[in-house]
Length: 236
Image (cartoon, rainbow, N blue to C red; front, side):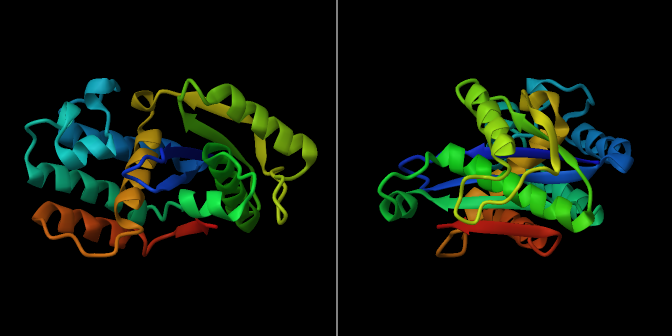
């Protein structure tokens, strides 16, 4: 069985893309993977305790905010590099969906809400991978109070219908039970999903290369991640 963890970033006036994405982890080596992330967390925060004070949150790491305030650029860049090494060394599958919100709304007279569409598409991409490895999976998401009930209902309806409601919709039978939600500071794997979505949101659709030192280095981290077991679907 695979455990799939996903997160998303919200569409705003400053960010024209809605991105959902995450990782799939084989439960056979899940303890080893968690131990590695625990060591990465310890190297940066000096503790293995899971709390908001030790959460690896992509935006705060990049900008030196929150629990990363007053941490050096070198340390923050190293944390991104360590997470990239974790993903690459363990050949962790990454799947993402990038929705150009304005283009999506312009294409359809009655466009799907971005969160609904993003959830549907990322579940499809998880199932594509599970088809490839001929296995089943269970899905975990970051706790979003306003979205949980609808997400669980949507997932249930997708499964009852037999497939997602797109023209080329696909079945989700590889995903068992329901979607489980928890706060990201309680799960290192959700924190990795958060960092991936942050990097995709910052670098996937840029039109010019970054100029600041730490921005360049972290862009290099993203480029290295994309050379691994990585796939992103652009919509529409």
